Image 1: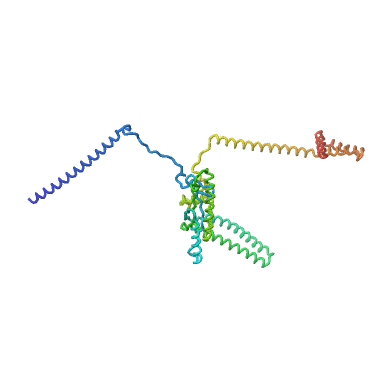
Image 2: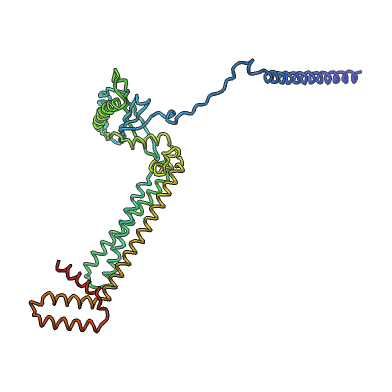
Length: 401
């Protein structure tokens, strides 16, 4: 009896579990069927009945709308379409912890005076940069090359002095001293470059720069009846006055400062917006590579054809000019060779003309005899032509003229 009761209980439990599983499966089936019906109903609804269909609108905006400045002009940062201008004063930090108590008190009193003299809002901005020593290393290398050339020159002179044997011991010692001095300078320079390069590889070497930002809002003009250029001029005058006041009052604290130029402001913003890239690719390299151009367009086809035709015309003109120059040189060379060949005939004809022109001075008989001898010589040789006579006359006339 006990076994029958136990089997009955087990069967009841199994049947209960199976019933529960069937109920769960039925619920899952019904829920999935209801979802399918909802999807079909949503697809069958026409867009006319459901009302006007809405689409998402995407607008392309200028990249300048995402930045906090419009442009940089006249050593100022323009913001909000020329309604706000900023001038920045760069400050050099001071080592306050290493100062004496008197110096600390002087700095504190100067800073209090600076705060009391402010009549306008300011912002203090700190920028941390990784030290980039590439430019310094290049400068060192150029200097070391000069030192190396001077050292090699001194070494050659010293060796020449030793080989010649014409110098005294005192002169040799002096030359050796100069040589050792240049050698030490050269080795010291190489050590500086090595240590500087090693330092530049350490990315943890950081430098902090401090800036005082001075704003100006065009609304300060009150009733604004000015155009953009006049507003900018007023903003520059006011900001420059404020910046000079900040520079003077900070000088009391022993802090050297200056007003940043437009190029320095460009570098400041470049470092602020491209912190990671600036450590690898500096501003100067980016500008040289043309990275300030966001896109480039190909030139027009007709413009390209015009440029190609201009180059073709220029090339043809150069070739023609060369040919004409060679031709002229050839003609002159031919004339020179012809004159060399007829040199003796020209001399005889010129001599005869000189005698005939001066026969009154030397006497007619003497002149006649001299001309006869010249004619005999000319008749005995070749080349006595009328052209030679004409040439000789032309030469004579040019000399007398």
